Length: 294
Ligand SMILES: [Zn+2]
Image 1 (tube, rainbow, N blue to C red):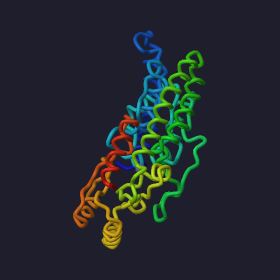
Image 2: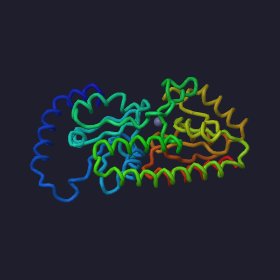
Image 3: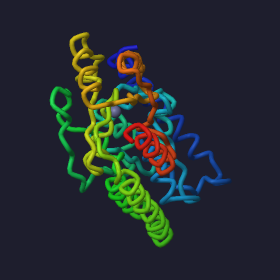
Image 4: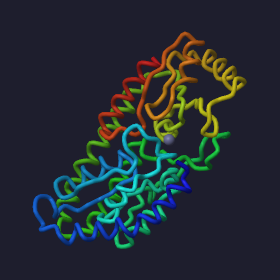
């Protein structure tokens, strides 16, 4: 289904769904969990951040589901109902395709909700040359950026629910300590690695690489599969740099990564830029990187 068509259907359904949502809200009697602050987020790592700051005080809905690409995902009409009931929406704010295409629509459904830009205070880096988008949207993959995002989320929760300010501040401090421990462990884990290059299909790891003095070699070019000429160049580069593992992520078809791995006698390793369990996931990514680059 084309974006234009779905947007058209959305426009028509919007009023009806909103009316239904308002009816449901007014009929609810405030039973179990209805006093939780309803928060909608665009991508899974943001859900993890909100849940760690809000704990039992929030209920979180994610727009881009597991396995979908946030660069191309289109929301379902039923997600509109969730948005219409939300007190707060957290966006990455860094130019994720889903947000660029849908934020106006989302805000139009619920003008009263607070929209938190989690990227506030983070300097956006440029994409590698030949990578289409001018700015790299994958800010969350540096734990130090995550710390800023968590701070922004905490301020948002305090704004919509000032009664629980102390609890939010305390939860936030606890989670930030875990992010700082993660950062320290990544630095230590990578400290002995001499060849700092890694090859990956979708270049989501630019902030991570910049933070930890690594060099990301993307396979995807301007969001597209590489041409045969590009492939030949990539295989040459991989051989020259002694690369043995080609990274790919579950959101993308690993065909070209597999082709390169075959040519260099290496293997494809999956790393997920969007896993919900943020800290455990980055520890897993660390161990896979260390294993591949050692
Ligand atoms: Zn991406």
